[in-house]
Image 1 (tube, rainbow, N blue to C red):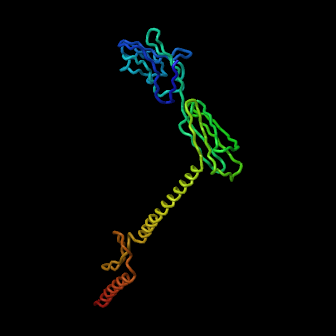
Image 2: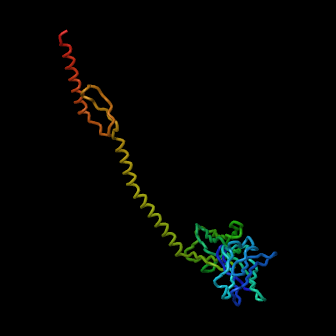
Image 3: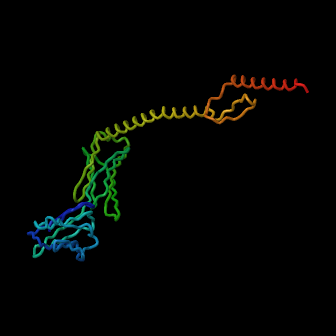
Length: 288
């Protein structure tokens, strides 16, 4: 059998070749407990009446290359249920068999330090991965590893391991710690070293400086807005002014203006009272 490894949720090609013909007959099937029909090709077109629901819309041939002898099958959005032994029949005794495995490789490994603990983790892996630790010089430590299943149907694996040092003053800066996550298809390593720690501290300091600068920049803006609001509250949108013609006080509701000073109001009131008194005296002195 030809062994093919496909990546979960990606496209994959199962190879199959024959002598080539313009009237080729091709049939693909998955050999499980029951015969699963994937795709048939005859009379220059797909024959999908017997196609299994699981492969509907996900299986296709390279039709422009069939006449040249290419009968390879392309699967899209590969799932773990696609694993198994496939048969490619092109007529005669030239059947081909492909053994398909599906992997979710290690994409990323994260390593970080917090106080006296170093933690390494990776997510979304299949099949179940293995995590190992190593150091730049010989040292004794104990690690705790947890593996959890994730994904819609629990097929993927998340792995997390921690190394705890009993001495909170343990010197991490003179050593390099490596964490490697391994699975069937690949492995990846993350390293924590003195350089990593210094870079982490430097990034934290830069972030702190930026935050302080932002706060200092916002203070004048907030003060200006506050002063603006205070200034608006000191203006009077509706002011009471004396009206000389009637000698009375009336409310004027026009655009906001500053309150007139006391001397001006006093002068206007004196004028009103003087005119009022003069009119009353004329009335009293008039003949009966």
